Length: 271
Image (cartoon, rainbow, N blue to C red; front, side, top):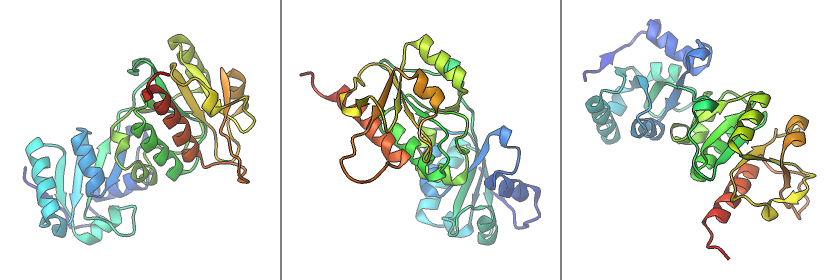
C-alpha cells in the first residue's frame, strides 16, 4: 500500500486528527488516538480497526518503522500517511512523539453481548476519575484474564490519550464498556454473578472471601470510595487489610490486589 504525504497543518485530515487527539471531535464516533510503536503494534496484533496511520520520515526509514509499515501494508490496515515531524507533534498528545500515531475506531461491546467464561471475573469501576488509574486498572484486568472492565457513570473517558497510554495496549485485548447502575445489577443477577465491593469498613477481609465463584469486583472512586447504591446491593463488602498507617490505597493498586487474589485462588492447587 502506497503512503500518502501531507505537509499542511490546514489539511482537513490533520485538523480532524488533532481534534480526535484532544477528544473534541465527534466523541460518539469512537475514534481515538494511539501513539508510539508499542501501542500501534499491539493494535495491529489485535486486528484493531485502524483508520489512519501517521508517521514521520525518520520513523519510516528506521528499522522498526520499516518492519511495522511493511506489516501494515501487507494487511491493508488503514491509510498510511507520512507527515513532517512538526505535524506529528501537532497531532500528538505527548511532548516527545515517537514517530508514529494511529487513529482507531472503538466498537463498544454491550452487556447483553458480553462473552463471559466460567467462572466469571469482572472488574467494575465506580467513578474512577484519574486517567492513569483507569488505564492501569484496564492493564491489570487484562493481566488477570478478567472477562471485561465495566465503567459506571462518573468514570473518565476510556479513550482519552492518557488512559490509552496507561493501558499499554490492553485496551485492545479485553472488552471495556459502560453500564448504568440498575442495568449492571440486573445483568449480574440474571447471570448469577456475585457483586463484591471494596470498602474500608468492609465486613470481610479480601483474603477470607471466596473468589473462585463467579464474581464482579467493584473498585470505588479514589476519594469517595464505593457509592452507597452499590454498597447496599453488594453480596459482600471486602476490606483490604492495611496494618500500616496509610488511610487508603490507590484505586489501581486495590484492583490489582483484588483481581490477583482471585487469580491466586483459582490457580492454586486444591487443599
